[in-house]
Length: 94
Image 1 (tube, helix red, strand yellow):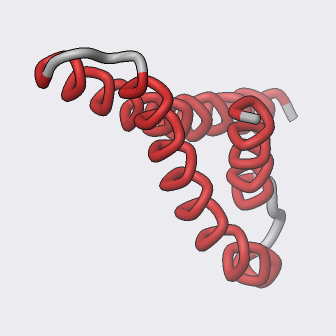
Image 2 (cartoon, rainbow, N blue to C red):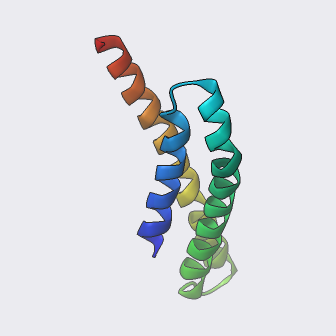
């Protein structure tokens, strides 16, 4: 389920980055942005619960929740950076 959620987020983010003009970007972003926020929040909550379920003690619980929140943030950052670099690389070669 986590893989499906993350792939859905990546597809939504790429749909915004790959649009050709501003009109289409605005239309896509109207639906993609709220879905991205919801996907990241849901993924972070599910990761935090999954990691915290196996943790014992307050420090380990805090670490588990932090890791659960960090994973979607890293997926978001890697998607933005990777897509930006890929688009820039292919724009230069065209």
